[in-house]
Length: 232
Figure 1 (cartoon, helix red, strand yellow):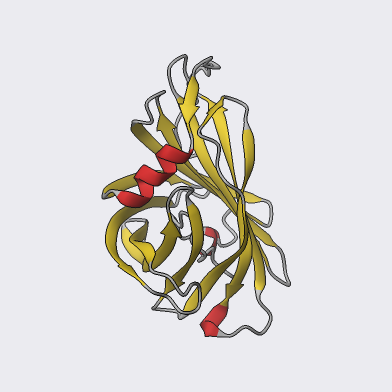
Figure 2 (spheres, helix red, strand yellow; figure 1 turned 135 degrees about the horizontal axis):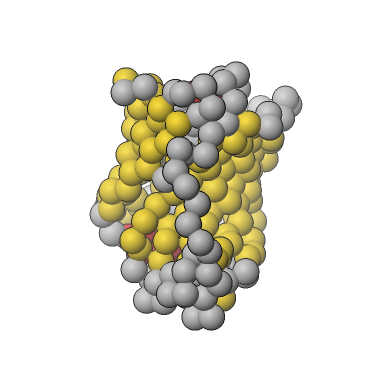
């Protein structure tokens, strides 16, 4: 089973592998009352901030079989570089590191370099050295400056190349959405999917923001073969 190794603003390595046949879970947390804010929220600027500043996020939860999961995700800006596979010009870089623990034991540690430009924000692709995997953007959509709850749109689409081979690439894409939370906050989500010869795997990585783009919380979900795991 393939993991979601392509970057996005490539924030997260899918937990699908660790779901196995155990079924999904809701994170073991109650769902608070949801209110639809009437504020406008910054979209592009929030993603730019995530790509350009150091951050550490964590989330945890459990599945229906009682297995516990914890994810720690960090982002660190790095020096610009020319990546000949993607562009003849220098690209901005951030390094994402993801650690996944299952039942308290480290199950996966993955580091990826992610390549982008600003004004507008465009993801060119990403590279995971441990597996020699590339994601290369083919089509991108410029993000809006602001949006209201209920809005959504395209972000990028392209191909994942495994072991640096361009034989049998797998199509991958990402959209954004702004979802209701409280009267003064909303969830800005990056919704990704990848399709292989067996099935489609998807995940959503969401950041709670206010109208100034300040992030106060993080959650994610991953779905494969009808099972969904939610971590908060």
